[in-house]
Amino acid sequence: MADAVSLLPLSGKINLRGRPDDPTFRDAVAGVLGFAPPADPNRAVLGPVSLYWLQPTSWLVEAPLDGIADLTARLRAAVGPAGTAVDVSDTRLTYRIAGPGALDLLAKGCALDLHPRVFPAGRSALCAFAQLHVLLVKIDEEPAFHLFVPRGAQRHVEKWFSAAHQ
Image 1 (cartoon, rainbow, N blue to C red):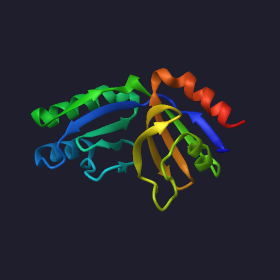
Image 2: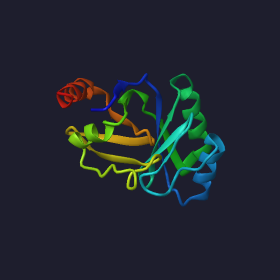
Image 3: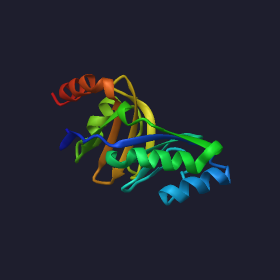
C-alpha cells in the first residue's frame, strides 16, 4: 500500500474560466499569477500557487486559503469580461497519496494509466475514482499525488482507503 495517505489542510481554490487562445485572458492571468494557464490538456503548473487544467476553457487555481479572497478579486478584475474567477474553496478536500505503494493503491480505484512515462509529475486529470468524480494531480516522481474529492464525500473516501488497505 501507499506509505502515506493523508488529508491535507484546507487550501484556497478558484475556478478560473476563459479562452486560452484569447491574449487578453492569457495576459491577464499571467499578470496576476506570474504564468499563463496551460492550454495543453491535463497539465498542471505546480508551485506556491498551482494551476490545474480541467477542460479546454477551465482551470482550478490552488493557493493558500488565507489569501484566496484577495487572489480571486485580483483575477476577476484582471480578466474582466474575458473570463471568470470564482472562489470554490469549500467544494473540495485534498488527499496526499505518496510512497512506493501509491500507484497500486490508486489503481484499485482509478482506471487511468499512471505509469511515469504516461503520467509524469505535472500531469493532472479529471477521472473517476472510488465511484467519484475527482481531480488527480501527480505532484512529484516520489511518486506523490494529490487527489481532490468533493467535500461531502470525505467519509466515503476514508472508508474506501481503509478497505483498500486491507
